[in-house]
Amino acid sequence: MILFTLLALFFAAIMLWKGARLPLLLCTAVFFWSIAAGWLTAPLLELAQPHRQTDAPAKFAPRTAIIMLGGGLIYNAEHELAPPRDVFERIVTSADSYAACKRTSATCEVIVSGGDPLGRRVTEADTYLPYLLRRQVPRADIVLENRSRTTYENARNVTAIVEQSNYDSLILVTSAYQMPRALLDFKRFGLAPQPLISSARRAHLGLLPKFENLVNAEIALHELIGIAQFHVYRAIGWF
Image (cartoon, rainbow, N blue to C red; front, side, top):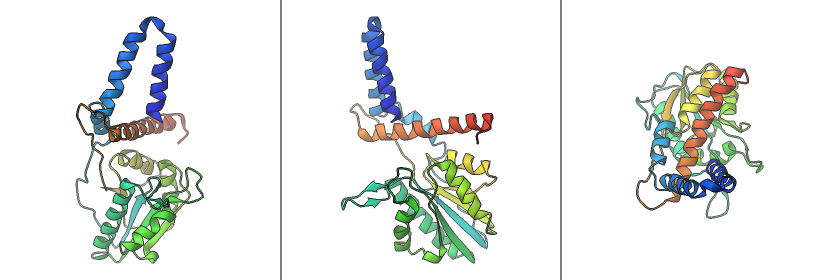
């Protein structure tokens, strides 16, 4: 949606500034080619993903909560709503972390946060639940937070859950591109969970355009704008 908006702005400028149409057309072509070919997408991802992997292993405590953030839903081959690739990586990472936690700690729980931002009448948290169960996370150790529509709401609603329990350790599981903004949002509510990155996105450099580079650029721009929005909202007292 961000790239489409930029394209619309370029097109409007071309239509309005008749004397500069050729330079504007060339700039538009070069700009979108550099994104689709990965050359501009790569630095955008570097900005959005300052850490592509977790620097240190997770530290478990007697009472540990593993917080997994939602990341949307897609239709699979059976035309059923399912986790996209990035979220599946979060599920795997959360389940593996839960298994490691149970080997060292008395109490381990997975808090799954994700509502229904697109109004499909199906929440992310409820959709992800069966995938965690298949990876041997017991239902009794899974807490569903299915009202959040944004990362900010993830942090706010999970904080309310955490405040009702005496957790000694909090571990935040999400993709590398979402982690910086998620940590900012959790810090806003007084929490500093350990970051555990489930996956990172990478640009595919070349001469030919690739659709995945466009997707990656859209995601990177969304996160960077979200971080800027967070700081603006904090400055004016909205967050």
